[in-house]
Length: 181
Ligand SMILES: Cc1cc2nc3c(=O)[nH]c(=O)nc-3n(C[C@H](O)[C@H](O)[C@H](O)COP(=O)(O)O)c2cc1C
Image (tube, rainbow, N blue to C red; front, side, top):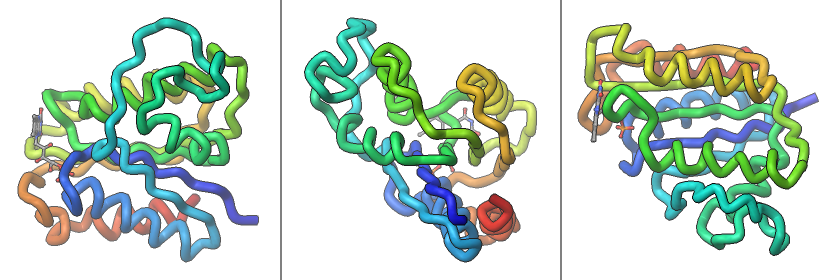
């Protein structure tokens, strides 16, 4: 039976490298019979968690009604969460990090999520593999804490301008990763 896959994207740039990788992953996953939704956290207005711990007190996950509450129902439906992000200063973009932080609302509100598996796709300008450790290590810690089974990490170096990733093998790798879920 197909799984519900939510892909959370981190770039504020439309059709940038991480968006293209997300689409390639989605194509692979859909061809394997899964249902995919792409949640463009990087292009939405999501403020950081302020630790008020009033999550769900007004019915919605966050009491501040920003775009997180719009994507939250899709996160609630997901069996698999895919994070596709550029690296900014060796880490996640602040936009996607704000969305990830707000998943704290499910924890505070004691709403169990269905997510059992996760994937990380990260791209950057650097050619140095170790410079991806900020995101890969954080992702591993998050997956471990959330009890998500890691289904794969794809790091894509040497991409900077929009579309650079199209001339790399990473697009095929992302598609294959999607098919493997
Ligand atoms: C604010 C900012 C910080 C960045 N920091 C890094 C970095 O630390 N390491 C790196 O390899 N690339 C860095 N980059 C480059 C992006 O990761 C790269 O251009 C990536 O391909 C953008 O993905 P996108 O096309 O999906 O937006 C940075 C870009 C910006 C705008």
